[in-house]
Length: 616
Ligand SMILES: C[S@@+](CC[C@H](N)C(=O)[O-])C[C@H]1O[C@@H](n2cnc3c(N)ncnc32)[C@H](O)[C@@H]1O
Image: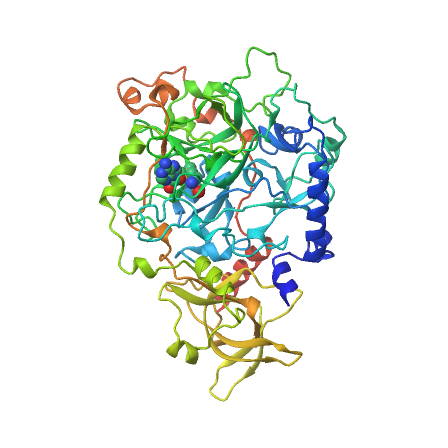
C-alpha cells in the first residue's frame, strides 16, 4: 500500500519506471551517488551549453543542460532541486501569450494540490528554474521526468524538508517566498556522458529523433563556447534568519570568478499583476509571488525572470552584512563563435529595443552572470545586493506588518502533514461524525481524487448514485475536489488497511464544463483508499494569498538596464525607427509549444463534457 502511494503519480505510458519499485529506485540512487563521487576532478557533473536539440529540432532556442558524467536509470538529480513558484488565476497570461507562458507548467495533472487553491483551476501554473525551464521537452525519447514533488524516488510526498523553512504567520516573511522547493527530475533511462537532458511532456511537435543524432555528437569541453559548469553551487537553508532557502557555495570560489550563469526570460510587469477578476491578487500591491523572484528596476516595466539552475535561490544579505556577489550581463568576449543564431544564448540586440517590445519577444535569450566580489568559501551563502528600493520596501513592510487574526495557531496543510507524521496512526482520515468532535483546523479541508469516468454501480435507498472508481492501474489524479468522509471500514482484502466511503462536493463557482465537474446526482465513492484522500488548504487561505504579503522585485542597478528599457526615456523620446520590434522576431524562436496546458486525456474529457452538454 505504501509503495502504491509512492508510485501513484507515474503514468502508464512511462513504461520503464513502471517496472521499478521505489526500493529499486532508492538503491539505484545510492549506487549512482557513489558513482558520482568517483567522477574525476575534470568532470563537471552537470553543465549548461548551447542546446543541440533546440538547434536541430526547431524547438526552442539557446542553452540546454548536459550530463557531465553518466546518469543511470532511476537516478534522482537531487542537485538540481529547484524552488517551485506558483502562479494563480493568471488569465492575462493566456490572452497575451507572453514569453513567460512557454516556461510554465500546468498544475493540474502534475501538482493538482496547487490548482485547487484557486477559482480557475485551468489558469494556475507552476514555474521551476533549471531543467523545468531549460530542457527541451517531448513525448517520446525523453530521458528525465519530473519527480512531481518527490513522489517517484521515495522521497516524502510533502516537499518540506525542514519545518523552519516556513515562517510563522505572525512573521512578516509569511508568504514572501515559495514554501515549495525540491522540484527534481529522475532519469528514466541511462543518460550518456555529454547527453543533453530532455524532459517528458505532451508536446508532439518534437519527435525526439534529433536526440539520437545529438547523442552521437561529442560532449562539450570546458573550452567550448557557452560551456558553464554548474558545480560551484547548491541550494540549502539560508543563513539569513527566516529567509527560506539560499544559494550556497559548493566549493571555494575566487574573487572575480563567475559563480553561476543563467538565462532570463522577459516579463511585462502587468503580466504579474491581477486583472481584478480573481481573488488571488487582492493584496495591497496586487502582485503574483513571482514578482519576488524577478529582476527589475522601478523605472521600467520590463522584468527579467532567471530560469537557469539555482539562481532563484539568491538572497539579499542580512542587515549589517555585505553582498559577496553581483550580477552582470554575460559576455562571450571577442571570441568568434560557430554557434548558430538559434543556439546563441545572449542576444544583445535586445538592448536596442524598447521595454515593451522586449517583453513580448519570444525565444531570444539574455544571460546574466553571478560574479564573486570576494573569495567565497565552500558552504558560504552567496548574496547579491537587492538594491535600495527593495531594502526600503522590505523595512517598511516589516514595520507595517500586523499578524492576521489566528496567526499563532495557523499551520499550512504541508505543516499539518508534517506534524501528523510525528503522531501515531497517521493514515486515518476522520469521518464527518468524528470531525464534529475533533475538527480539522479551519483553514484545511478534506479533498478526494475523483474519476469523472467512474461507473455507476448502484443507487441506494435514498436515491444516491453510488460510483466506484478505485483502480490501482489508472490513478485518477487529474481531478481533486472537496469531499466528506461518510464512513471508514477495514479493507476486506487486507484488514490492516482502511477504506473509505466519500461524498464528492462542489467547488464554489464550479463550471459545469470543467472536465472534473460532478455528473448529475450525488456522487458517492466507495472503496476509496487513504491515498485518494488529502487534507489541503482551503482556496485562498494559504500564506501566499495574504493581502499584506511582501511583494517586490529584486532591484538591479540603474545602469544595468539599457536606457531604452527605462520608462522616463521612452516617454521623452519618439520611437526610433531603427529600433527592432518584436514582430521582427520569427516564430522559429519560440521555445516550445506546450499549447493547451492540458494532458491529452484532459482535453478529450473536456471535449466530451462539452459535446454531451450540447446534446442535452
Ligand atoms: C528570489 S527569492 C530568494 C529565495 C528565497 N529565500 C526562497 O527560499 O525561495 C527572494 C525572497 O527571499 C526572501 N529574502 C531574500 N533576502 C532576504 C533578506 N535579506 N531578508 C529577508 N528576506 C529575504 C524574501 O522573501 C524575498 O522576497
